[in-house]
Length: 289
Image (cartoon, rainbow, N blue to C red; front, side, top):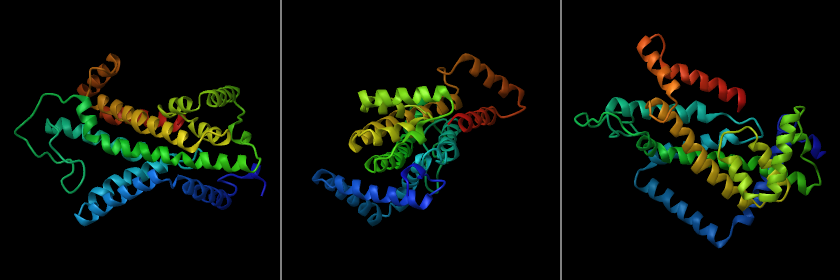
């Protein structure tokens, strides 16, 4: 099969096969002494979870890793699990904090989002403390999105090893997008890690192209993973969650006009301000990302 005709839509079986073979090859290269030690440590943690009955805990956090992977797996065809699962979860935790007047409640399990101490209330919980309440699911979801980007990276490495080209993926009829793509490729070849880190640190629809370019132009797997995990796990995902929390919590850092708009919706009672803002966020995310 000609690699120029390879795509998830036209040839899903062949594309999945090539990705699987290359993933196995790259996995074998990762089996160093250090990585084997990390693998043994993770297996030990799983053993502790199973032995001491923490299976619900494992499933709760494991699903966020899976959701994150679904978001970015595939080239432009990921499922936006942030919009469907993570952001509503963060919103519910922020709303429950306002209702309880404190952070004394669980975020998972049978007693999830149930106030445990009604005798202690504070006027307003700082948005950062609410972020700390959900930071682990946010980090794990972000890690999943970083791992999902390996699909485009491995596909580009396979195309390169067979002497093919990725122009069909990065060329566009839009001259602006073409110019941006060419600039990304240029900076990627010059600055590697920092270009990937920058691209991974904010929500953008061009990171698939960055992953393809990184795999095609010889960026190492370790460099790509480190930059992507750092950007998506510890910068982008927490920032997204914090923005949502700040809006729900009516933080003083949000623009005054937005704050006034929320207050006016609260007073009018015609429509929930959260529903209104969520609708706009949904439209923007589906349109641009």
